[in-house]
Length: 91
Image 1: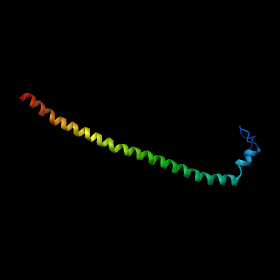
Image 2: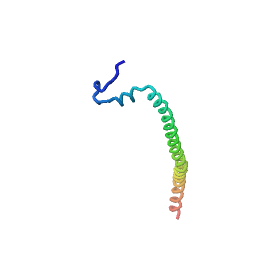
Image 3: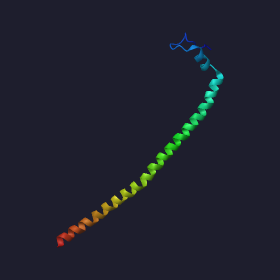
Image 4: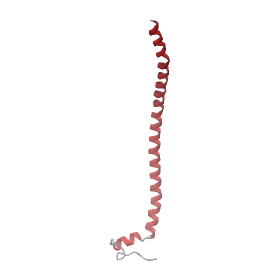
């Protein structure tokens, strides 16, 4: 396997960067930390999504009640308006 040195790349890496990039224990530690960090991020996003969905569902109930009320009001007006018009014709 060819080792990447500062002569092979466009960005000079230097000795310190070579030691960090190529150290096996450092990679293993970062991988272990990455798993826990990703798990915490997933839990955080799940909580955020649950809160958002709970708020949307909480708003959906009252909105459906208002829409059903408007629908019933439309039916009632559709039934009462002809009755009022007939009453106007009689008097």
